[in-house]
Image 1 (spheres, one colour):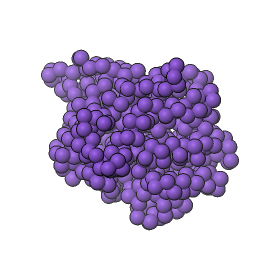
Image 2 (image 1 turned 45 degrees about the vertical axis):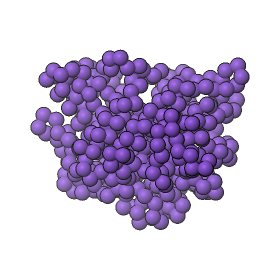
Image 3 (image 1 turned 90 degrees about the vertical axis):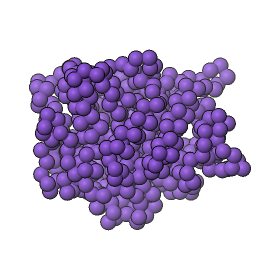
Image 4 (image 1 turned 180 degrees about the vertical axis):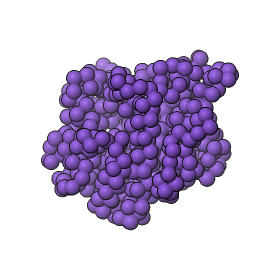
Length: 454
């Protein structure tokens, strides 16, 4: 048995997730333009280990192989992203038919295998040509994104089941802060720039939603936010205030404008001074909220960050290879906080959840990632408890289907259910793949309806 104590609701979506830059490769083929992450990867010291996305997992050329891996896994949903510069190389103007054709084949391949497409429009790799005009610090970027969203929906909207406008906008501004840490900008200037970018990302989402609805044929629309759940490092006034700041600048920064029509406050003032007309755009109704969760945060006062707080270790809690605390029970605390803070929550899809490892085949050729299985199983238990407590959670996506290029960390961290040999590009399903396949089959009643039990 797969070790989860009861059955999920009928119709629950079982998925896995990837993103374009991390798996596709073919970085300059068939008319694709350079993305910001292509530029970073080609710069000395840009990505750990000198990695680039030039080949990545070569998904662009191995699409049928990867679709078969999804079918054999038993997925009912697959979350992927469109590469903006692959379909519109300069971000504006000319569309690239070869790029759109690729996503046509991907969507059709999913549907032919009984898998619902969950399409993410922006997973961080915007065209370098738009970055050269200011990127997300430029308010015009919101309009460029809405035009791009509309064009993709006109091409694929008759077949896409769910749309995700933005993936982890918080990570976009954190990446910006990290890149500018050594710049001549003061901490205050960096903070203001990051918050301006956050506002423009929200405007992009708000402008895109009605265009998606107009061009689409009934697919659901949402956004994916990375949330942590903040715990004070101690009961001191200073640490509790720091945790409240962290909650405002991270967990509430996008949730409050989307769901409550206002920005969170710090020291009695909203973190972004927003015109009411902008708020009215940002709160365009969504059909679901995507949640990406990996680890909780324990917050102390001070530190070198621009927001006046720092993360500290959880006593007695192990860490994974990236230094993140391994604490699945905190996932449940996040659900409780969401229920208390946002009474009118839309339905939820878990759009990412996973664990990095240093997974390599043993002498038998097997990749026994047992720690990942234990982590995923524990997280699924927390989701079940939240459902039992009344939360409307409708789907779950493991990060990730494949080992891939993990952004600034390069190729060393492996999150995949499928091992990828980056020298030969051979795919090897890990023990977690086989576990998840059995789990999905049991949940869908494909083995005589036997409930999952320990």
